Image (cartoon, rainbow, N blue to C red):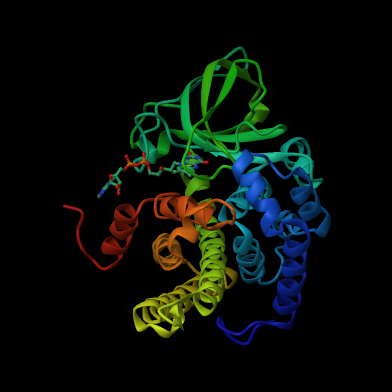
Length: 385
Ligand SMILES: Cc1cc2nc3c(=O)[nH]c(=O)nc-3n(C[C@H](O)[C@H](O)[C@H](O)COP(=O)(O)OP(=O)(O)OC[C@H]3O[C@@H](n4cnc5c(N)ncnc54)[C@H](O)[C@@H]3O)c2cc1C
């Protein structure tokens, strides 16, 4: 049990040591660079995560593990030191297992979650569409009733990891035309190799390990057992999922920021120009010190969100603010690191260019800044008009 949101429990400290050793062994910098450059998926890394039991933390909704979020942010921060993209993949699996634990039937858990818990399956999520980004409730992909089951038609975009083998996608689709858009949504569980599903990798600047995919659904026939929860519960499933998701990916970004700052401090202490190490110039040291302060403040925001989550308290606004801060500083810290490391930072014989391209998009994934600030503005009492 922790004494405060900002103190690390013994269990957390042990988990951090385990996670750090795990990352050193299974995701060393040279391997991560190769995975990123080649766009290859580290199957063994995720098999080992399953073996360590980290997915199990969210597998039983009736008996939640104490301090789940506090433990998960520890793991995500350590993995984020290697790559925020690796955290994104971890998050997809954890969020998928948790969605099924909360909303799924025993049969769905056996079919879709058990392979992931066993280390050979994967989850991905499809909300975005060519015409739908931040306004997620406006999805146009439809599920219609047919022959005692459902038929899905439409297109999803930017689905991370959807093309990896053994992936089951959680797709947000429209199931009616009743009243409010949010009441007409449902989540379907769709294996990426199901007949009628076509998955294509999209060229992207970063997130090369997971890969970004577009998904085409042509008369995809599904049984009732592919529906997660009930028709109309899709928005609630997504909204509740996003809280822990934001907390996890935020701590992953923090790990990446810490890593980028560490490599930049080492470089600044070593690189000499005009007879002194560049760390001696305040033009170099003070922006790095300021970034460290901001990282620490963002960590407090993540820890507070995790503590609220673990206490069963509402933390939609707090987790949104944490994601806003962490996305922002990852983008800024990786840009500052590039600038500080000069030409050395730009060449692809270390991982900084990966952090730079993944850092740019940290602001956008899981909601761009303007949309997050809208949530904050409403919480301040500013009216939507
Ligand atoms: C690396 C990566 C991975 C992703 N993974 C997934 C995934 O696995 N599954 C998935 O479904 N999606 C995924 N996405 C999509 C992601 O969720 C969307 O990019 C995000 O929701 C924003 O949508 P958009 O990019 O279409 O931007 P838009 O919503 O079109 O917004 C464009 C710009 O308009 C601004 N804007 C929009 N609405 C408002 C408003 N109300 N007020 C003020 N400004 C506004 C935004 O801030 C933004 O700057 C991923 C995206 C990326 C880049």
